[in-house]
Length: 66
Image (cartoon, rainbow, N blue to C red; front, side, top):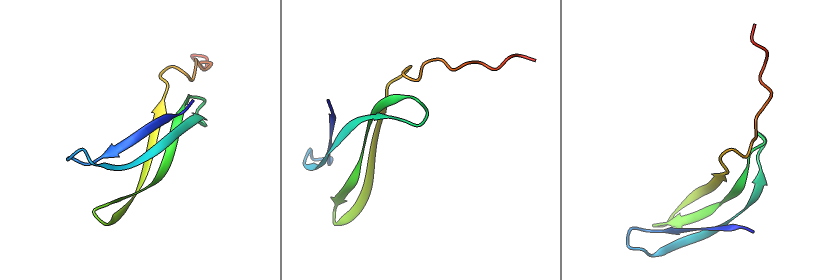
């Protein structure tokens, strides 16, 4: 499974698509991530899309209270 992120301008014209693939982040959370480049009005932009599943990290062990 993957998620497609579509970018459009204010006139609803398509600017580009990114496919966000499943990812397990270094923090232990799960979600989806994509990066790429878009050209908008002749200028190049680097784009990142990140979706993090809330609560996917689980509960970490809490340090003892002193």
